Image 1 (cartoon, one colour):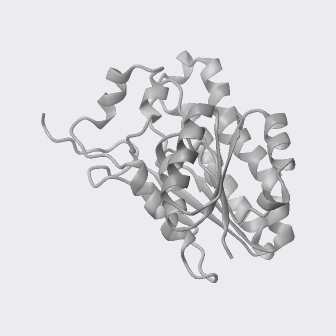
Image 2: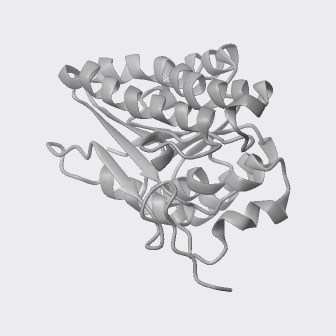
Length: 254
């Protein structure tokens, strides 16, 4: 039977790459994001290339009402969700805690923690009812080690790490797998968002190294999803070869 995956933040980066690899492998998709034109373009591209069904749901995971309205009103065809990829997330700003922008703090907390919780709360009851499912939470090496100026962003990813562990415990008897994926430096729109759209500054973190790509992480997600039923990949940390941890990176001289 064909499975269905729900992917948040599917309009770019890891989410988009994950949508592509899942569609390539015959998984029907519910793709979510805030940019309607990108969702439509991705849906068109994937349906042209692969024989899968795709539903686009344009909403902001930070908005609890939008989340519940979209998911609670799914038709019967889409109600059985086998895979949830909680990918939507961001970093905003790079300041010491005493200089932090509170609007940025709230944006990260609302997206990275509350958004993940809203979507999970809306989808998990049906997974429990069906007695199966797989939740993939996109965390970060920032949720394993705190780095200077990372304060609130790191805190949100530590929360994702803790929530992944808690989900695994709470869902243990329900036959639902939970996997936490923790990427290091991935060159997507992440830094562009963090630096407020400044593409010049966004390139600085990746100078002198070959960073990971969204496709690299999507392949790991597919690997975790494609294990035998009795196997659960709990936690994966992935970095570029040039990165040892959150703050130690070997850069080639330019």
